[in-house]
Amino acid sequence: MTPRDAAKLGRARSAGVLRGRRRLFLAAATVALASCGGSSNTASIPAPAVGGEPAREDTRFEPACVDLESEGKADPTDDPRLETLRPLGDEPVVQVMLPRVVSSDADADRLRPRVVRVPGGMLASVNQFVDVNESFGALFTVDADGVIKKKRCLEPFPDVIAVGQGSDIDAFLVGWTTIGSDGSVTRRFEVWSLAHGRMTRTWDDLLDANGISGGATRFGRIHRLEDSSTMVFGPSEERDIQASDSMLVLNLSTWSMRTVPYPPDTVGTPLDLIDLGVDADGSLIELEFGSGVPGGRVRAVESSGKWSSEPQDLNSSIGLRVDFLLGESTSILAGFDSQGRVIWSRDDVFDIQAEGFRAGVDGDVALVSACSGPSSGEVWCPGPKLMAVDVATGTTLWQRNGRWAVSVIGDGRAIVSGPYTDETVTAPPPWEMIDLATGDRASSTVWNAPWGFSVGCCDSPEEAWAAGGVAFTVDADSIDMWYPRDVSTALRRVGIDSGHR
Image (cartoon, rainbow, N blue to C red; front, side):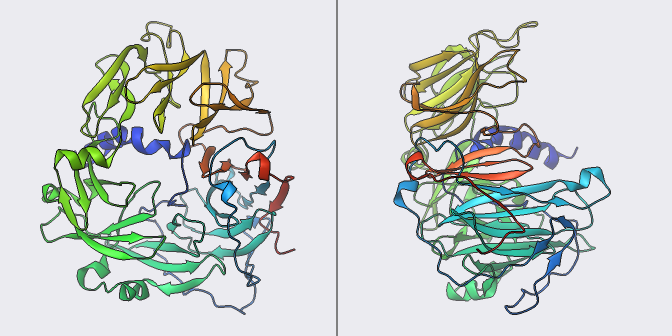
C-alpha cells in the first residue's frame, strides 16, 4: 500500500462518521446517482438523441427498456405540505418495480438503483452494477400518480447525475467519464431538462453564461459535497495543489458558477486528499480528518472567494457534533466543536462494536445507539440502549433499553425498529416513527413486512432517507416513495416498461 493509499484509507474511515449518514437522515440534496470515479469503459460518448427518432429498445433489461418521450406537459409544483417530515402513510404512494439484466452470469443481474426527489415525484436510475465491459442503464422520472413521464435508455451510462434543491428545479447535471489508454481522465458534462429528459445546454454554454474562461474550462475532478446544491470541480491531474490552482463552484439550483482558490494551507497537498464541506449559506469549508475528530476538524471557511481561519468563523461554520470519542480500547459518547475539541463526554455510554447506526444529530437533539458498558469477552454490548441526548450538554432526554435499528431521521422525528432479541432476527419487530424530544410514538402507525425502512450493511442496496417530508426506501427489487399520512394516496405500482396513461 502506498502512502497516498494509506492516507486515503485512514481518511475514509474517519470520514465515514460524517458522510455515511446520508442514508439515514438526508434532506433534499444534491445526489450522485452513480460513482463519479473513473470508468473502465473507453467507448466514445454518443451525441444526445434528438426528438422524433425511432424509440430505442434495450433488450439487455428484462423487461426491455424503451425510450419514452415526454408529453410536453409542465412539471407540477410540489405541495408545501411535503416539506416537513411527519407521520407517513400506511404504505407508499408509488412503488417502482425494478428490471433485471439478462445475463448468463448469475452475479451480473444486479442493478444499482438511485433516486432523488424532484417536483411532483422522483428522478430515478438503474444501471449495470457489476464491473463488466458494458455500461448501460435507464434514467426516468415518475410522478406521484405512478406515471413514468419520460425515460432514456443510455449507453454508456452517466457517471454523474446530480440535482439541486428546491421546489421549482427544472434541470439537472449529467456527466460521463472516459479513461484513455495512457490513463488520462476526461469528463463531459451536459445540462438536461427534467421536463424532457434531454440536453438543453452544453457545458461550454454554461461556462459562457457565467463568464468562465481559461484553465477553469478544463476542470474535471469532482469534490463531492453531500446534502447540498453545490458541486466543486478541480484540476483533473494527479499532482499536488499549486498556489495558482482554483476550483470551479457550481450551484445546481441557480446554475451560477464562480471560481475559488484552494485554501492556502493546502498548497503542496495531493489534489485527491482534499476534503471539502459546505455550510448552510453555500460557503465552502476545508476539513481535516484525523483520529479523535469525528466528522473532521474545520481548518478554514470560505466566503466570497476568500478563506478565513479565524476562530469565530470556524465555530460559526458548523454546529456541535455528537459522536464517539475514539479510545485505545473503548469509545465513549462525546460532544465536539468545529475544531474537534471535546465539549462534554459520557463515561456511561459506549460505542457498539458492530456495523449499523451509532449517532445522528437533528437540531438540538442527538439520537444514539449505544452500550451501557464496554464490550468484554463474549458480551459484545452490555446493556444495549437507544437514547436521545441534548447536543449542547450531553444530558439524557430519554432512553429505550435493548437493541434498536434506526433509519430515517429529520424534523424532530425518527423511524426506529426494536427491541431486537436473538429470536427476532428472523422476524424483525415493526417500524415506528418516534418524537425525538420525548421518545414517544409520533403516530399509531407501525410498518411490518412487506413495508420496512431497513438500511443495508456494507454493499447491500437497501437504503432509506427523507427529502423534506417525502421518504424513500430502496432495495434491489423496488423503489418506494412515501408521503405524509394527510396527503398520502393508495399505492400505485409501476414498472419501467410502463409509460404515459
